[in-house]
Image (cartoon, rainbow, N blue to C red; front, side):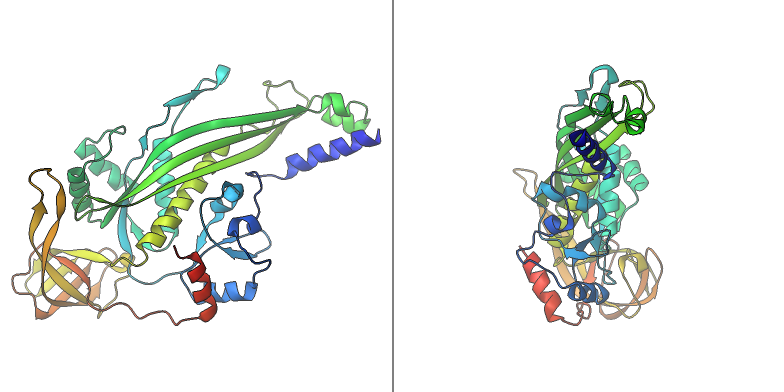
Length: 398
């Protein structure tokens, strides 16, 4: 009898640890720290001072900086990935439709077949990139409209030419797309009936009689690609994997007869963790890349630039103008090598709207035209250096 009570307690404890879980989990595992402790005042100060840090926060409010994306034991923590606030220029990104290269679906017996939700993965990646606070992410509906016009299929990788065309229409600096390599919504499934174990426990046994605990585990692997609009060439790739499990239970009814907590969806948690990992890696890669925009219109003395308050633009910002002389293409391979750019002068922003700015010439700019490139003439004022935060950032560097 005593042993049966212990088994019952363990069953209930396993179930009532609610929410997605992974093999080990926990904030300590997620941070992958070598040290045995972390000064919370130090981390909190870095967050307040807006140092460049991505971090996790547990239910107790404790913070831990992100170290890497390789260990799947802490995948559940990636669902709550956070970034410090940021007020500087925001690079404009677009997220293309996800490509599926895994098996199209997985047989689930009498439950039918489950298709890979490429649109949902695209949306999660869009949200993950937006939540970094470092990017101006183009609305997914707008992306879909342009992709439809370009008649791009979901099983063919975009060509450099289509990347350039889509990117220019959207006014983006980079485009991102994902390729699903592995899709296993039911990597493993474990279940346990309670009736045979708890049948002699009196009222507790009656309450739990016929009950069933079940844990489902899913795993996904997705490769994410970052492409430069100026050339259509790949700038960065990152392959991410996530594994997630979740418990559910049914009381007093046979398996499959209903009356339980419903179907759990660990695969959606796994995708969320995977896309957040990719957002972190892309943000870290683009951290030192320059923001760039374009001249979209000219009206007498006013020059309109495709960057406004949403991209971190403010009045009195000075912009260096680079005239596009020509697109350089390798005639033998058809590969776009880049743009021939020539500096022609400087602009100063005089007014800012959410999606665009108005600037005036302060130096040169003879022959300025639509499509010419602009970038910051001087870098933004650096955030005051905090030695403790610099040490954390150094530990995150590649």
